[in-house]
Image (cartoon, rainbow, N blue to C red):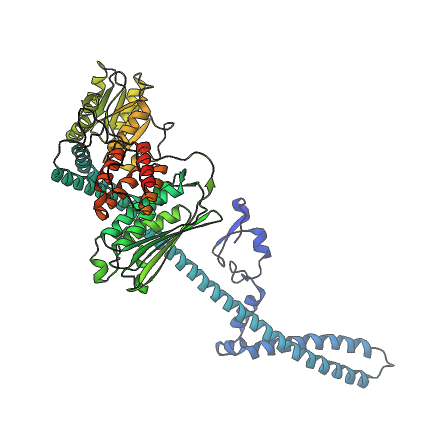
Length: 631
């Protein structure tokens, strides 16, 4: 009521408003009717006097509307009579004035005043009664409003408690998912790591190599599913970070097209691809998240399409890219189109349920689109197909982009032998890292915990540390801090963890490590990290084609004149384009396609494949040029 805070002598509790009020505000307020002094008002004292003087049966009629009117009229009659009587007495004191004339005039004046006052008194009674009724109604409405406010406060408090409970449950779910992902990554790291090692064995039979490749791809798929769960948890927790880098959009799209064109051919459906001719050379965006979003959309399109086509239509205007993925698959009912964007939700139809999946693809794609500042929309008709559209701001930039590095087979490195200390509590993971690094010439020292690692550095001078974060006793962060304080200020430290949330977003300024790796560890990522931190120069193992003399260890000559086979013009053009951009995987996929559909060109395909495996792009271009001249 009163926002002032004075000394206690100037403050009082107002019963009308139920709060503290100062003396000034109390004096200015006219609505409370002195509720703090119920018998102090003149009207209340008159009523008390009438109750004391009159019989009890008269109290109610007197306190009615007519009673108030008669009382006011009688009071005025007494007052006006007294005034007119005084005037009459004063006037009749003069012998020259006629008493009858004065008396008659006074009576007329009295009647006129009574008529006027009678009307005024009745209006006053009605106005006073209306004011009282309005005040009572206002008080009643105020009381109802106060009750409603209290009810809203109670509801808000319950909603706040429910919100806190939901946030607590969501946080518990996120922690559970992260912990579950950590437990999944622990055995998956060993499976994936040893699958990579076995796949690089030269003497492995083809049937065993195919099985090992299946294991590796299955491990990669499981890793992607785990990453999807973590993405959902991180987005809901508001901890997913977006990183912007410059990349070539044309090569980026070509890689996706090559990937899904083969999948469509395997399902005997058509893959259509259209893009504008005037695409910028480089754009700035989170390449990883954009790739993940488009792969999810294209994967769903291929998965739910049995016949017809899958199309990727790219449009670019005013630095806004639009990616439209269209399919002629089973479609989505209109009443379920909103639900499919929720995690773990799938279409309730037999044809859709027959396709394998977790129900995370569209949910992750929509959340990632919103995180990147774009929008994802969906249009679908049951049994007709679905079109998903991703609109995203992709500003064009000028400058060097990130070129795709071909995957060489490494057999060692140049320079003195390097020592690596691996601190890992899981014996399988220690053995895996040793099996990955020891054949390359590294001196690998293993420690099951932080204390053992500290004992190792007393007699060894390592070049780099690989530290697992979750270890009993001293964890990885504490061990890294100990190593820094014991003089290893410049020795690189790489943190390894199955929990991506422990690593992503940390920087060297805030933590003692130089880099990090997430389980399951990819051999390529591990070697790239070592190459960067130790400034290594790798030595690559030469690729030997089975049909080539092992003593000369050379690829077949580039002269194709001895053979009469040639390639169709459109296939040769596609191969030339892939060679110009250095897309090795795309070349290998295209050669696999040629080998299947053009068996007459098997010898030429074999020679091209040998040059691809040796990463001899220039020789590959020479063969294609010679083939063009022959045709």
